[in-house]
View 1 (cartoon, helix red, strand yellow):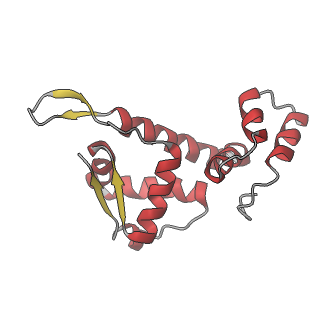
View 2 (cartoon, helix red, strand yellow):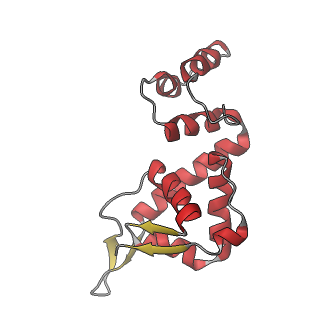
Length: 153
């Protein structure tokens, strides 16, 4: 499924996982869900495909949590203000990475998201290494270097 990026057989995957002894009811239910969004189907397949792709999914999920709940100084220089008025989601971050690759810019609703990329090239490379593993879309370093990062803060 990851090679073809075709996820029509998700219910069959759930059956195969169950027959193989999978007891994760939440995972099985998600695989069998009607109208499963492509990004979520891709996420589920990555979780069961390999340790490397599962780790990449978990890294991206943690990234979302980190940029949603990081605190920063507000306009009055007070620390402790929630950094997000519109929380990011796994799906939104996957789309943001694709937009960055295609359009050359990534926009976040928090300064924490944009600041992560501004802090170092290593951060950018780590994000896109994990992002590329789960999406199958290559993100060459020279392309990453041209992406701008902004926030609506």
